[in-house]
Amino acid sequence: MTLAARILDAARATGATVTTAESCTAGMVIAALTDPAGASAVIERGFVTYSNAAKTDMLGVPEATLNAHGAVSEEVARAMATGARQAAGASVAVAISGIAGPGGSDHKPEGRVCFATHGPGGIFSETVEFGALGRAAVRLAARDHALRLVLKALTAR
Image (cartoon, rainbow, N blue to C red; front, side):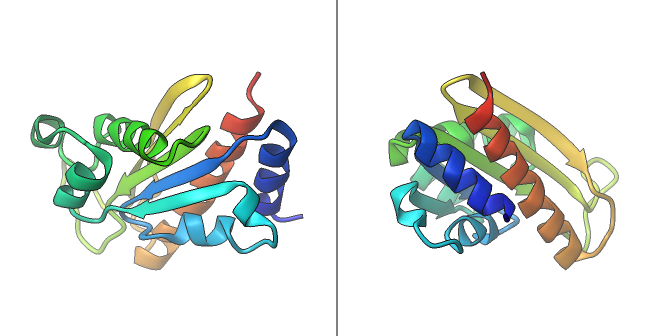
């Protein structure tokens, strides 16, 4: 059983719904979640907020947070998750913002991805340093990590 199918089963079992707020993955998480049949019973919507303006307009991420911490930060990921959960009326939201590459800087290197989930158990965030694996590999690793976080948020007691 795929991770996405396990997420859908866990959500169905509790009547939960799931939404996503994605930047560097540009919809890869919501695409994975909607691959299995029956996803419409669980998935409300997904937000692709690649630009800072989209993060502000669609998810209500405060400009002050973006200015103070930058888009690739746990603070912004938490605000994205909270905004997505509220906008979708979902039980659980996952957010991703990172630098897939190529590029980056000494302060924010290629492969750094910030994640957040917001669910009934509260908000969780973390930063994962995938390293300079290449754009495609970082995006796939971020997608898979986000899916694991969604499952964790749905099954946390």
